[in-house]
Amino acid sequence: MKKLLAITFLCFLASGCREDSASEKVMKFINTGDISLLSKSKLSVCSDSEIHKLLDEMGTPAKNRLSTTSDYYSVSKYLFSKLNYKIVSSVKDGNKELITVKVIYPKALRDAGGFFDAEEASAKYMTEERKKGLDNLNALYKSGKLDDLEYDGNNINFTVLNDGIDLSIPVDKCMAK
Image 1 (cartoon, helix red, strand yellow):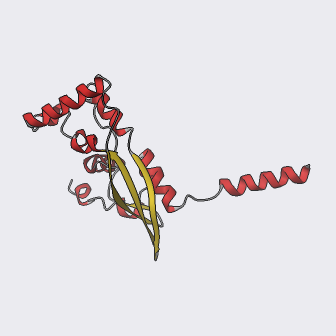
Image 2 (cartoon, rainbow, N blue to C red; image 1 turned 90 degrees about the vertical axis):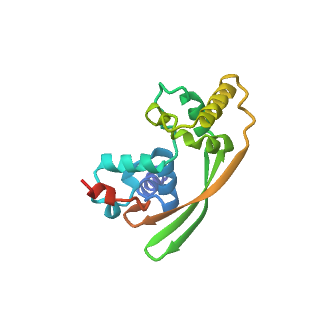
Image 3 (spheres, rainbow, N blue to C red; image 1 turned 90 degrees about the horizontal axis):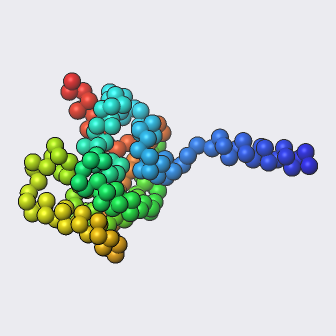
């Protein structure tokens, strides 16, 4: 019995100390937006708040960025919840690993432009046609008729270095202080 407990404990220790694979790091970043998973050497000139701001501008990772007071918050949250990610390839290339992720998303989310111009501050740039489209989408959601969604997808490439994920963030914006 003691041997069994000792073996179980050793297996537990060994599995708990394993470092995440490059694919696991990418998926964790996609699901959490945890900037500690990003390459420190590539982002050393940026503060955490600057990194968050740059990621928001890039729309990375994809998430509902509308405030809860937005007219489109609920429909945006619903559509973003339908995103699905799948690792399609992982290729080791010297000291980096190239990870390709397939993103499956509702076409309605693409057609809504990810709701980037749906916030009040950006609404002044929204065309009347675009507003009608968002209003129609919102009405379908509120009436419960936004269930039978069509999906599309595309691949996103990530480069994982020894010290984290390199998103090729334009760090020159951090240095322009």
